[in-house]
Amino acid sequence: MDFKKVWPEKRWKKIIFVSLVSIIIVSFIVSIFLYLGINSDVSSELIIVNEQGTAIALLIYHPGFSSFTKDISIAYAEGLELNDWRIIITTANENAPTNISEYDLLILASPVYGGAPSPTIGRYVDRLEDLEETETVIIVTAAGSPGNTVQTMQEIIEQNNGVNNSNNVLFTSAPNEGNESAIVLSKIAGSEIFP
Image (cartoon, rainbow, N blue to C red; front, top):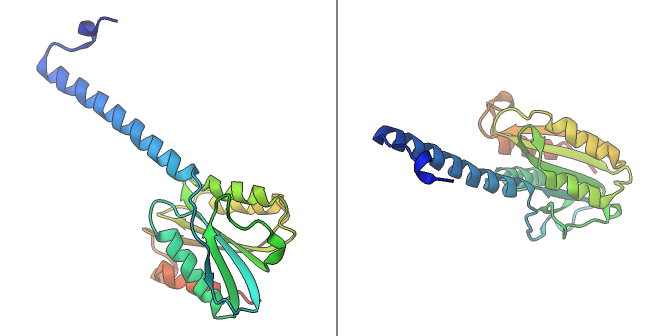
């Protein structure tokens, strides 16, 4: 390929050409970053809330690109704690607990990516294989529209023999119910689940 035939001769064409090539390269790099962020398992330590609780809940989340989903998950756990739940919190990864028979409640929290949940949540539930009719709560965090995320997560739960207990959709940018803080709403939702 003769590079001289591709390279523009006029200055304004060179500027446009370099700008377009730069945009393509930056877009490619950002796409790779987003793909890896959405699809990669993120390992975290187990957090135990209310170690003396009478019933045990397992809260699995994908952290997303900000701390919002983790913050929402912690707030939900604080709400559960008010009803004497013991809560184990960790990210959806290959080291997360998989013996679901040890838990009375499973909570799955995922940010929305393109109208769908994080693939890590689906992979985690697939590793469980059978939810053994465990009561399961869905928490979805989104900037604006959740798209089909709740429906997709309900299908994942049903396909793996789980029972969908409740769904919570909380927003970072769009107004939440009653213009309340998403953190407050998450804690309230957790406090409404009894052992």
